[in-house]
Image (cartoon, rainbow, N blue to C red; front, side, top):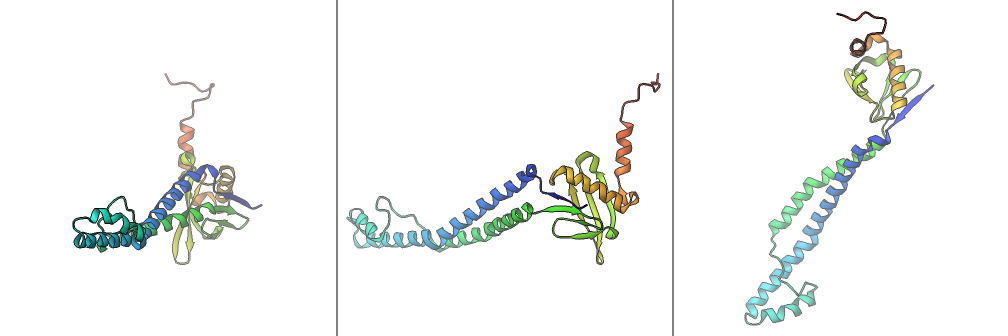
Length: 216
C-alpha cells in the first residue's frame, strides 16, 4: 500500500513568513520602479520649472507658482522636492536588491506548499520529485528521530551521494511516521544509524519495575 504525507498545515507558519517577506519585498520593488520612472522625474521637472520661475519672476514667483503648478498637474500648495539623477539611480539599485529576494521567497512559497513525501513497495518518494529505490539508499541518520522526529535519508544519485529530510513536524505526522517505519524495514536495521543508541538511552532512563530490587 502506498503512503503519502503532505505538508502539515501547522507547519505553514514558515511558509507564511516567506509569503510576508515576498509580498513586502515585491511591493517595495514596485515602489522603487514607480519612484524611478514616474515620481522622481516628475519632481525633477517641477523643480526645474520652479527654479526657472524664480529667475524670471524673482519678485512674485510665489504668487505665480500655484498657477504654473496646477497647469502641469503638480501640487500648488508646496514646493517640489529637490531630486537628481542620482536619486533615480538609487531607486534602481534598491529594486535590483529587493526584487530578486521577493521573487525567490515567492517561488519558495509555491514549492513549499506542494511538497510531499511518500513510499510504495519499491521506492521512497522524496520532496522535489526525487524517486529513490530502496537499493539506492546507503544509510539513514535517525539520531534525531526519537527527540525531534527528524531523519536524513542518504542515497546514491549517479556518482554522488544526496540526502533528503523526513520531518514529522513539517509533514503530516501519522503518515510520516508510517513512512519512516516502512523505510526502516525496507532498507534494513544495519543501514539505520543512531536509532538503536537513542532507544537504548530512552530505555535506560525508564524507572525500574516494581519487582526490581532498588539499590541501597
